[in-house]
Structure formats: C-alpha cells, structure tokens
Length: 200
Image: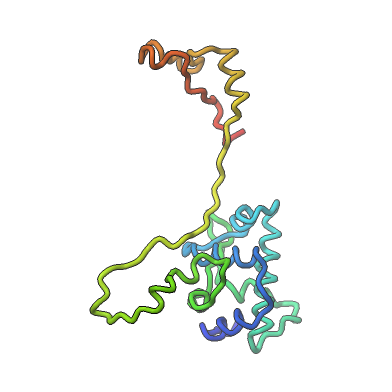
C-alpha cells in the first residue's frame, strides 16, 4: 500500500463524510493506546457482542477515508480498509494488534473533533497568548480522556440475606469484628465470596 502523509490524512479527515460516534471513539481509542488495540478490545469498549462488529467498523472507516485518498481502488476485492488506518501484526498473547499509522496519528492532532478528547487541549486563552520559547516555564497536563472499565456491583439484598442466614461471624475465615474491635465492630461484617464475583 502507498504510504500516505500527514497532509493526505488531514485532507481525508476534513473532506470525508461526518464520522459516526463509534468511528470517533475508535479513533480516540487507537490514538490513546500506543501499544495497539485489538478487535475484542474495541468490541468491548463499544458494547458490541462480538469482535466481528469491531472488524466491520474498522473496515468501514478505512473505506470512508480511502474514498478521499488518491490511487486507491476500493472496488478491488483485495482492498482491506484496516490497512488505511493501521499497521498490524499477530501477537502471541493478544491476537491481531492494530497500531495507528504514525501519519494518521499526526493528522488527528490537527483536526478539531469535538467528540475526541485528545484533539485540542489548549484553552482559548492559551491559544491567543504569544509566548517566546525562553519564557515557557511550565507544562500543562490534565486532558480529559474517556476510559472503559468493568465494575462488578454488589447486590444489597443478597448481602442482607447472607447476614440474616450466617450472622456476623465469617463462615470462611471465622473472623468476628466485635470480638476483635469491640463495640465498634458490633453488627458489622465484610461479606465476601469464596468465588470472586468476576468469575461468576
């Protein structure tokens, strides 16, 4: 595949059809992860049931940008949209890993996408200041970045039922808060699972 420049990608991003929320989130995720991303990671982050949907998203976005880049025949059966966005290789531990093309990464730094947290971190005040290099004494950090995690919530009713059934002495380790801590530990127990919630 031809190597496209930052300018080529900048023009393609500027002139292509508007990006969907999922496409913006994909670019944001790829931009924010220098170790690369995988289809299962993208699927999980975007709430897809299967990584095939993530592969499809990458292909569609690649095709959308390819339509703006020269010398690409997207009607060719051999065309794969992911090649436009990423360089990739198989990892023995992670499966196939996509790395955002360096030129596309540079282009993303110069495009105003309100949905992407990485694009512009400067405020209007700092944009208008004229500062000489020798006057710069501090660095600014704290750009907002959206991340996705799994949190396993406890069920209050299940906790209460457990206390009513087993009482305030742990059945796993026989720890008694009142005996150890006195009055402050009365009617207190840290209900826990023998099998971790994440494994249920």
